[in-house]
Amino acid sequence: MGLLKAGLGAATGVLADSWRDFFYCDSMDANVLVVKGRKRVSDRSSNVSGEQNIISNGSIIAVNEGQAMMIVENGAVVEFCAEPGEFVYDTSSEPSIFYGDLKSTILDTFTQLGERFTFGGSPGKDQRIYYFNTKEIVGNKYGTQQPVPFRVVDRNIGLDVDIAVRCNGEYSYKIANPMLFYKELAGNIGDKFTRDKIDSQLKSELLTALQPAFARISELGIRYSAVPGHTKEMAEALNQELSSTWARRGIVVAAFGMNSISARPEDEQLIKNLQQAAVLSRPDMAGGFTAAAAGDAMRAAAANDAGAAVGFMGMGMANAMGGSSAATMFAQAQQQAPAPAASAVAAPAAGGWTCTCGAQNTGKFCTECGSPQPAPADSWTCACGSVNTGKFCPECGTPRPAAAPDGTWTCTCGAQNTGKFCTECGTPRA
Image (tube, rainbow, N blue to C red; front, side, top):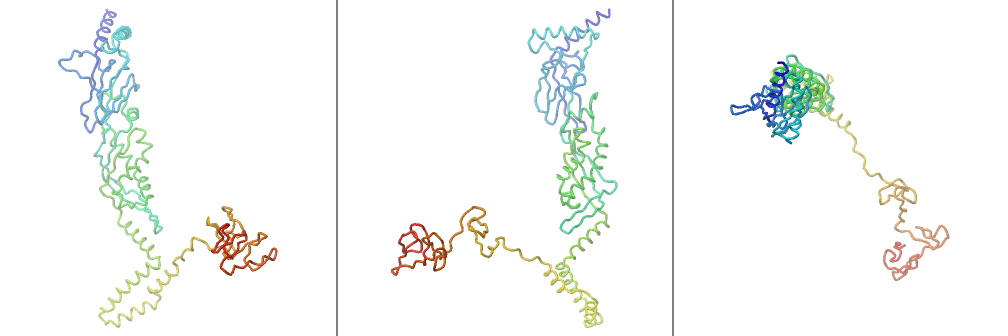
């Protein structure tokens, strides 16, 4: 009887699972991260006896916007789809007589019948479809119970000090890698995986990452009071800090919002004092501050109850005790002012010359481009080939040729000219 029952169960089970199925996912609630896919079965359907965890070959799987679909067979991921539309699963190990070549599917069905008989009529496999919520998971509130260190850096005045701040707001995250999320967190779930299972852990890890993320933000020169205006940079810094924990689970910070950030009053005053001290270390700024203070003192002295003379006498005594005047500080600032920069184009060295390429030279040829040194405007070339500027050639003693009385002159090349340059060789007139 056992063998007969197993054979009957195998036959009916194979026939029931030979129908093509349609898998879908209802609208996923914002609190649901992963849910198991469902077969569409209605009152008019004849496919009411099939196994829930069997996907026949040729079945259609619908994927909506903001979802990703994964098929898991016997614990291993065999298919994945993140594009909206219909997905036809045509590589299933469970044959269907209604899909593919009829002859092949009939042979596969009988093979499957034999395999099920060895398992007492039940299928010896497990096939499941999981849908992942890939939309932003919003509304995650956070707040620092204890002050978080924040490094304040102002390179303009050399300020580098650590203070403590408090902040609160909301952040959103999303599943960026469903496969990692399934393997690390949601593997082999029965029906669905909700956010309340991980939100507490994620919030704790995010608050831990705030301190190094604030350090990255401060290195960009962003003041702590300006952080709410740089939420994009803050989200990037948090993702860098959480890469070793969230990224290996397939989760990323999608957005980070900050309602407020505040420092302790003593830290605020410390920063103001350091900034004022750095500013007053400059003589020009200190001079302006002193001039303004002197103006206030004069107005106070003029309104002195004992008379303006007594008030101004007190000012004179204060200056005599070593106080620096505004004029003295302005003079110090002028002395500390940097000297004007030297001209970018250096003058040629004594006895040197400047080539057309801009190089400074002292020899007869340019050291950069090899051009010869140009002859002086009043030079002349002797018949022996020597270029001279005096009245006699220093090589052979030939006197410098004189210009013709009628304005014409003879060049060393023999050409007769009337202009300032020779029309044959370009030599300037002597």
